[in-house]
Amino acid sequence: MLPFILLLLLVSATPLCAVTLSLDDAAPYALAHNRDLNAARLRIDAAQGRLKNAGRLSNPELEIEFLNSTRGGDLELNTTFMQRFPVTSRLRLEKQISRAQLAQAELEIANEERKLAANVRAMVVKILGLEGERWFLQKQIETSRELVEFFRSRVATGEVSTLDTLQLELEQKQLEAEFAQTEVELALLTGELRPLLGLSPEEPLKIRGVLPPIGPLPRTPSKGLNRADLLAAQMQAAAARQGVALAQAEKWQDIGLGIVGELGRTEETPEARRNEYFVGFKLNVPLPLWNNQSGRVEEARAEALRATREAEALANTIQLEADAALAEMRRQAQLVREYDTALIPKSAEVEKALDQAYNAGQVPLAELIRARTRTLQLKRQRITALRGYHLARIRYEAAVAPATPKP
Image 1 (cartoon, helix red, strand yellow):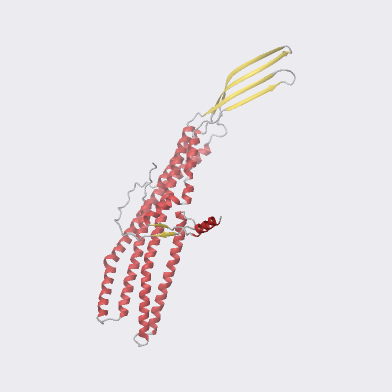
Image 2 (spheres, one colour; image 1 turned 135 degrees about the vertical axis):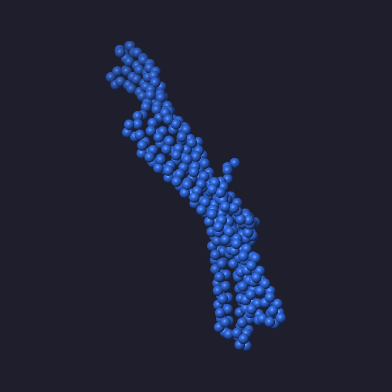
């Protein structure tokens, strides 16, 4: 018993292995483990069940009637077997509507997967960008401390004023506060990402990698977008239009066709009894006199028109989303290229020249340190622009993502 208890304590004390994900791994992991998405996929099973039950005849009816005379031995036994049949195409329309609803459910789940993948990728990009900014911010803090120490050493000799030193110390404190704020933002982003990945509270999470470089910019998307939510809206509109035909078909209720069997026994005298047998057919035709489904037809037409206009509005919204994201990509990409080709190289060139001048005793150390700080600041700003580019790219790819056909 003691070894078992020790083993149990050892297992409980062993920390869980961290879930380590990169930008490319995060979305597939979320699609496989997100708890809300796994629950939402059950809507497809429900739609399949409705399709299986749609378009079927109503159950047959068996009616038995027994009559016995209280004054004599006369009795009567009536049996009716009836099956109802539609006189319109109601069953076929019900089947078609259920098929459309199943396709709509599958497309809605595909749209949930599209949005989940985009949200996860966007959060990972924000985390990677924030970690990159934190690295350069830490370097800025170290450089600022070096500059503060330099100024403090020159206050006693009167080369710099105390006020200048205090201003540098304030800038250093601001950088340190900004660094602390990035820790809070990083914790918030990680906390928002964990439920999207389907992680339990005990499972640690680690995001690895860096932001990838800028890739080739896509061309303007075509007008023929087939995103999952657009196809789902179009499928809903098609089902609503079929609903109009179904409402019209339901004006005539099912007719009933039955076989009637009757057994009658008449007792004229205690010694004389006569049995009679009858077999016939029964027809039941409901007449649409009081309820002709006119209100239901008007409602179905309004629903079909609403669904059609919503699908048209969604198509326009998707096009606008794609155009806006593409324009944002181009602006951020141009900004990143500006940092790479002009700003950062120019700042590095100035820093190199000041370093040579400092070694030659021509400039003070403060000028060199300020040049290093300026270069680090430009690199931080480049990370921000690169993060903005990737966020815009994710929005663009999510806006034009086509629905993946089911195998």
